[in-house]
Length: 209
Ligand code: PRP
Ligand code: URA
Image (cartoon, rainbow, N blue to C red):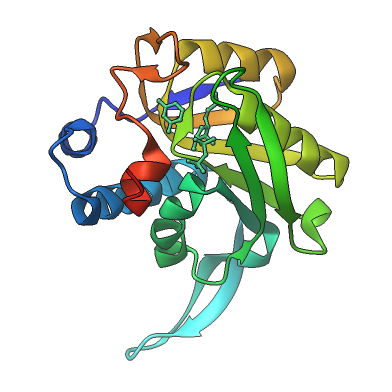
């Protein structure tokens, strides 16, 4: 399935340059993660179905169209994915939110799940999974597997920076999942960090290092 990269937009490239800079502080880092999440959400919801509604402007009645927000759920992967939530809620304010807690082992790079809580009717919704980083792909792949076990049929993965290795792994395991990313970087280093990347997204969002 498709990978949509937003980087060709000058404003996205500009924001990414600030985000990647090691001298950018927590406040600005959080703000830009949130802004880029909004842009990714716009792009990922380009195919959203519209329903006809009748409203009244101050001038007259008119027929127009709206999205049914109940058709969607957003699922951040903890911790770093929660940094994208503000930007999503800004544009889809009635979104139902699930959470999947995962951390990567520092030696094996394999993810461990420590929390899973999603809306009861998640199998009836399209789910947009949020995580700023798609590195080896292990966390995203396992998160999507858990959602599929709950019966979710339509899933999109929204990330800010991705590595070619993670995209390949995701496409092999979940060929039905579309990936929306602000940038596709060069590679992973020996510690499975994205190069050039932006470092540890969770630590930079929460100021833990
Ligand atoms: C980071 C990131 C992803 C994962 C990506 O989280 O937010 O979830 O690593 O790596 P992968 O594609 O190789 O699985 P981390 O495990 O560091 O946890 P954190 O969000 O709590 O910092
Ligand atoms: N997780 C991060 O936060 N950054 C990376 O580069 C890879 C995984």
